[in-house]
Length: 227
Image (cartoon, rainbow, N blue to C red; front, top):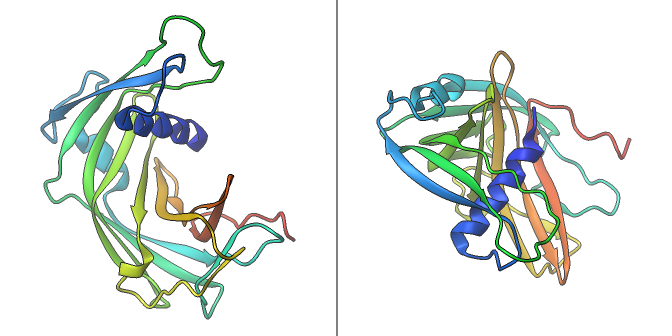
């Protein structure tokens, strides 16, 4: 698995959409082409191929992440550290598209940064996450699944807002307190021939410092840096 590459490509994708690249910064110029579900894209992959790795119900072990040293921590008051989560991916007729991604380097001096521009097929689906302990009982529309040409896995990342959750989960505290900004997301990966894995977490800003945090993870072992 190579999630770092996907995170990098996604960042530049969002940046190019928002127009936040400036002169001298390489970026990905991206063009979306709508497809029928079974229509082959220029990378010889269809939306059906994407769904083939992700669609259906997946019952997975979930761990509510505990406090770890002085790292940012969001407490949801989970009564038990471990439970199970059922992730269900359903195609309800959402858009299927091929995204052509081409590296553009402006003339003149440029920043020496690595930019990975990867053509891919995307499918918008419904995603449900329901935990046995009742903390999550959620359903999100237009969650985008993405698969690149040479990958044997599908990834997704979707912004969420815990205050609108239907389950019993509540944000009890954020430590350190009083962040400048905080964002939540659910993300994951569906690999061929292996269990899905993912996380519910986000990012937090304290003045000029950016941190990331996990609230829950599934299909993977917790980080043992505090053990």
